[in-house]
Image 1 (cartoon, helix red, strand yellow):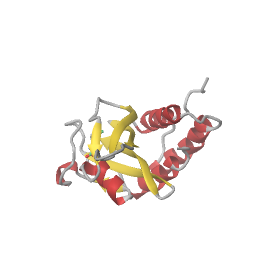
Image 2 (spheres, helix red, strand yellow; image 1 turned 90 degrees about the vertical axis):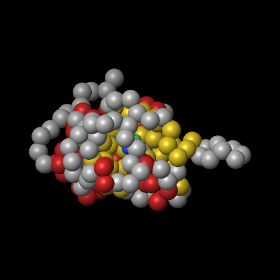
Image 3 (cartoon, helix red, strand yellow; image 1 turned 60 degrees about the vertical axis):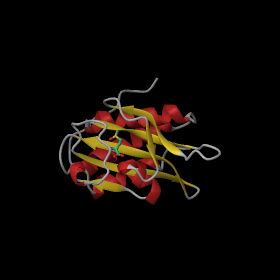
Length: 163
Ligand code: SME
């Protein structure tokens, strides 16, 4: 059984620095992807208390149907199930294979509002063998919640997960 997460106060970088070894511990020796995505989302939610945090996973299809992102393990209100490449913040992060920070979702053309409470957002792609296999999405009720510190540490966290 996993031990309780140790939640700390302190600045953002300190919070990530305390959390990352704990996430590493949760993932250690576990190869099940759903379990690892679920515990990573839960750990982030517990430490930061964001409105929504979780994963969308690229689902491969065959034939004329395009690949899509499908919602995976997350914490927060129910969310859109499928997102096409290039759509919304998640689909744009997937298409461009880069992290996107949105300080004000109302100013991001095409933002997909899964919750009317969301005001700002960060989406980090998970890249394996030069391909985006999933994205990590975090949403906040506060404007301008996410910055380059979140980007740096969230990119480190997604790289801990074995896909
Ligand atoms: N806002 C995202 C959709 C996912 S939800 O926020 C959980 C987007 O624009 O892609």
